[in-house]
Length: 208
Ligand SMILES: [Zn+2]
Ligand SMILES: [Zn+2]
Image (cartoon, rainbow, N blue to C red; front, side):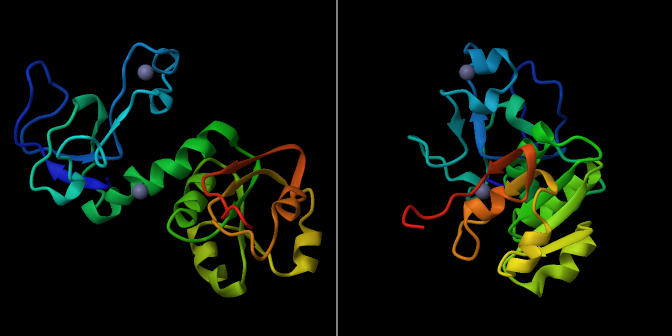
């Protein structure tokens, strides 16, 4: 579901692509077009979505040689982006871009928990949205790469003094880490300013 390919056929009435054009396809294949979510242009929340994979048909996602797809959910890939860099934007990218776009405004300070496949993109998006970015990780090992991606603050969540010093400094937290084994949600919530927002795109195991 992070697919880059070239257009080989076009359905009737599709004029937004040309044959041979490089395009990208993510998780969502379609939406109903008639529900409140679709009407409000939040079609990703439509309850009748169909997906690239794991559907009732023969969908094999990007492992197939060809895929037939709705034009609405196919995206042009700008020339300057190599295919291997464009592909992750279609899942990891949109997963982090969507909550940041909704909650972040220029000048805010945004904490990104977890500097991995999602977090490294989240740092870059938040920075590009004009925010100060605090990378939050369990150890010091991601400090250099977090700074390279645009984080100007680095908080080690296993260090109680660093967590205490960062209390009440964040407008938004985006949690991309699946474990609360080092710091719990309470400790993370304490990093927020009053009326701050936490968005979780990952959740801990139920026994954590
Ligand atoms: Zn719908
Ligand atoms: Zn994915």
